[in-house]
Image (tube, helix red, strand yellow):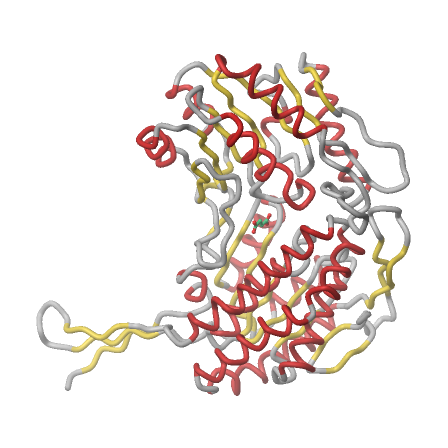
Length: 476
Ligand code: SIN
């Protein structure tokens, strides 16, 4: 297990000797002790990235693309080792961990293909007096602050397009799940041969000062963040000081709308995927189930049956479908939302209280009779809880779906395709699953509206996020 900072191709401890323990959420045991980076470590990482970036930007796009393709392959070749690390430090079931590695690797394959198609344009100005050349140089050095819920994929979704476009990166992985990140750095440097300094990783338990130091560093031109909206807002304020480019993938509060004409079995299958994938700790997770009153009982019963049948267990155990939450704080937060909904008149038809230890387990929970103003429907749950709220008309469903400052994801289930498209386009969210519970794909533009974020990751848009646009006016 790699436990050291990655700076300029070297592995080293934190400059002030601090360390941070990584816990297994399934039992609270220490999995590893990792170096804790300081402000000066972060500054050294930014210096290294600045030096490496200059040479990397001059490497031919095809050569950069081939390195990215090799990163894809090395992840696939090492998928079992990487998935084991994810299970140990995050706790998600092995099937989800393996799925994450496939998903994470695909960002390299997709972006290897985009790297050689990073085109600009040439045209004539309207007056016919000049030629207009538009091209897309790399931003330079990009700071990436990544979350613990996808220890691999939320890094590769940023790193692959950034490197493809000719940038160097400084990554601050989460303190809860740094081991997968550090293992990736080893594979990419040692097996693929990415130049030293191109990817730097500074793990740390107290992120604010090192992250601020990176944002103040002269070489850093962009910050790309995935995490909560409040932290994103802080980073946006800090980015303003140096007018840094920003990409923000922030919180969600996804409505999952079930119309009476939906195929209810398909809706339940979609609900399980939308709610429960990766132990219900995704920002795309269905947060509020808005169900047409006439099918509320039928849908509620089927969903409760499917949720209660899921196997809650340590991620490495046979057949595990739901792992632990990341820590005790997460259990307390999820349970707080559940208890406050129950106090407000909701009923837990399955689940409804933390499981006995060891580990941070919360059972799949379905809440009926939830009101739209309950905290559990207003806040991002980030746990295996499905609150059901009734509606009677299409207009009301749309109004309820949009009654949030978040706009990452929405789900619509109906067999009437015209209605499905009509409702989908009225939901204020960057992504919609229409009769589907999973939409994530490296080839799709992932991102949110409203307070759920700025910018898109994946698709063709994703690589341009890590580029500047330069326009050259000339005559010939
Ligand atoms: C996230 O929860 O941050 C990402 C989810 C996904 O990529 O599917």
